[in-house]
Image (tube, rainbow, N blue to C red):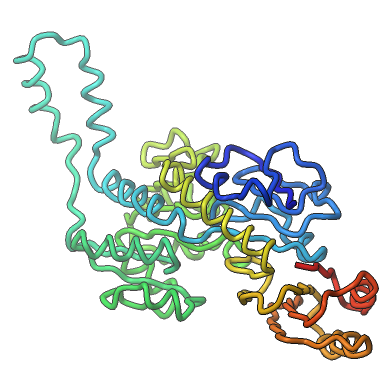
Length: 389
């Protein structure tokens, strides 16, 4: 029986995916085969020797020690796209709040709660409503930085609102490119996008290359008075540089999902408490996707949506399969097949993929492997781990 340890509150619909006859799933599992979590900050010390996989019910994995997992051959999954619609809708909310002073208007009306005379109330409202005058989104330019699962939805929504939409994503995959509407103008670089956009919406992952991407230099290229939306990750924006840009008027407003000291009470800043994926639907979608990916990996060795291992999915052609993780160096596959040949074990199917410094293999055998064979493959220099499916 596989053991899956959970952290945080995982949606029941996801937990119900696990077959009770094959899986023991709880927050108390000892020496688990897999972990299923949301926001729990996982420490390296929590990576037990039997652990083979971690699934994060969400897109970001900055709460998981990915490098340490890779060194141990632990596959880390995320759930890209499962919460995309939830985040898209929050971005649309931010666009509307930034263009129309709805929040200010609501706050003003609440300040009139002690007035009981309806005529007096209406007179005050009519006299003061000009303070909350806004502008329409139609005809404005939306710049989308990152055109993946969320960014492509935001781009499409901007077009539906009558906006001109331009986008930039140097790492756009072929699959992701199919999701981007043809009407989205492709920018060659970020300064070009910033200089044209009335609204800039960030949808890039937090990586060393994107941390502090919005800094003093990039903010200088912004169209004066434009609005910056950050529903990606807080460290992508240099807070000190943003504060200076707000003070100078280079940035007109900042709307983000990440409260930070120094900006919370700024009159032209609106911050929400990390609500991007906080819908019942998103939590359920993420939980189901994470659970399915874990089960597929544990039962067949297949990998989908991993952040540190290559994609490799294959049906089991026999009842005997080995999953082998190894360093991505020359000669590894030959050494493994030599060990099998020495024991007269026939290979029915073999699948091999690599990603950066690691490689992953699914080897279907004609006969059941014994512990001696597994030990022999484990003994090859460069092999990280071997698992019998």
